[in-house]
Length: 132
Image (cartoon, rainbow, N blue to C red; front, side, top):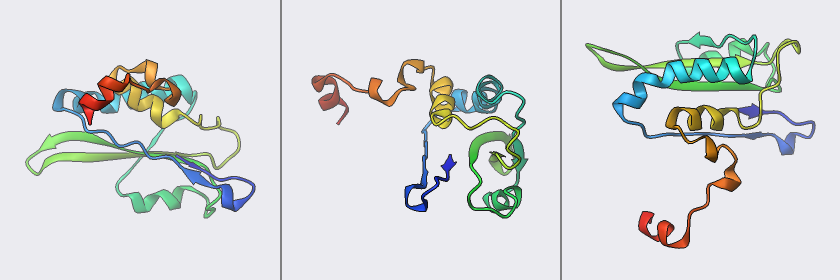
């Protein structure tokens, strides 16, 4: 998710990267679409072929807020394909992209709604030691 700010030094980006099993991978596209309907009403994500196409959908403005996803696609003879989707808020008519939207998609996919708020992601000290 790219969020341009009025002061360019404040611009920032959030990246969510998940390692998922094949069963979860098969649900990624559906979860992305369902979460988009719930949090970005009336938005249709654009399917694009490469990340390079993102800028083409931003009206030549680096200040356009956008969200971009790569999700596991169908298996083919070449292996599992990657599907790319994006939404750019270029017209001012569409909804604002919620700050936690990428995290919401990830949490919905993993069934961890309680972790959408990053402050709820703490573990007990012993559990953290076990994970480390």
